[in-house]
Image (cartoon, rainbow, N blue to C red; front, side):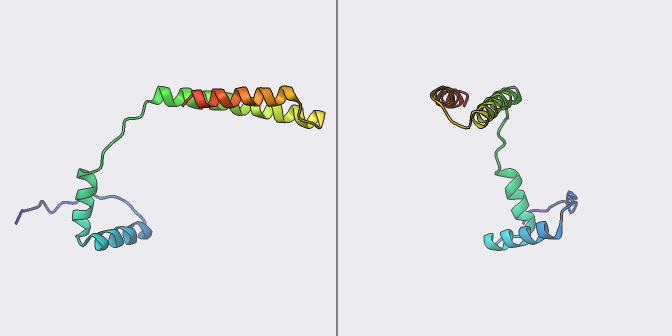
Length: 99
């Protein structure tokens, strides 16, 4: 049997969190400690490209701004004309390209 250091990292959590941990470890038939070790060792970390994410948010903001402008125009005119539908199509195509 392996000998473990008895120190345990302190992680503040709610009673709900503790209950969830208890439930998940019981479902797996392992101790809470082993469950947490497994979670740490076998979880992969995905790197986030923050510049790409900022660019996507910027473009999304522009798209929503354009859609709001079109909606305002339609509300003023009290109708949706062909120009608005064409512009919405362009916005849709552009939104597919920014993924």
